[in-house]
Length: 256
Image (tube, rainbow, N blue to C red):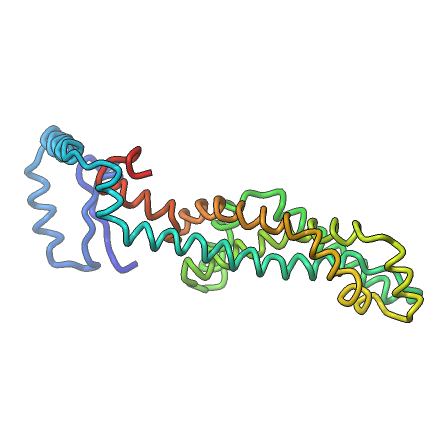
């Protein structure tokens, strides 16, 4: 890391610390000064600081005006992650939905690979729909660092996590949209000599997309709310930004 934290006494209290640059020459001097301050004095100083900040009389409007750039950046990041995650997730859902509707063929080898693909798609959908996004975020972001040495930016990880998570939900939406199309449409396409992919992209999906548009809009709204869990990997969306502001002014209710 680029900084080192030095804990103020008592050692087990890790919620109070001073951040310095790594290998800072000020470390010994600060530790020497802190050693002269008793635990009671430390608590008194902290209580007085919090009391002074709470007595500043800063209201909701003042907090908004003073931090409007941070709020705007948080809103922009939230909408950007949600929008891109929904669009990419829809693309993933379309692909998975089409693969899961591939009919069996007369060739045994082809059927074997089709079943393997369907099984993998089913596992993907069930796992990502059955686990919280906050857990997926932790596993993906820190797992990529620990096992593969990939130190990606939090925003990049956010796009991937939301897209893959949304894709699992959209896959079921797409499957429902495809199943909503009359079977006669499939039979007519087959009678014209179309294969499965031609049938899907020329006949079925254009009609299915119209049916799933409301569900896609709902998923976008869900993503706007669910991006708040990305604060656990330090993504500067609206919740993370608001928490940072509230941590500075100690006015959690007014800030949120």
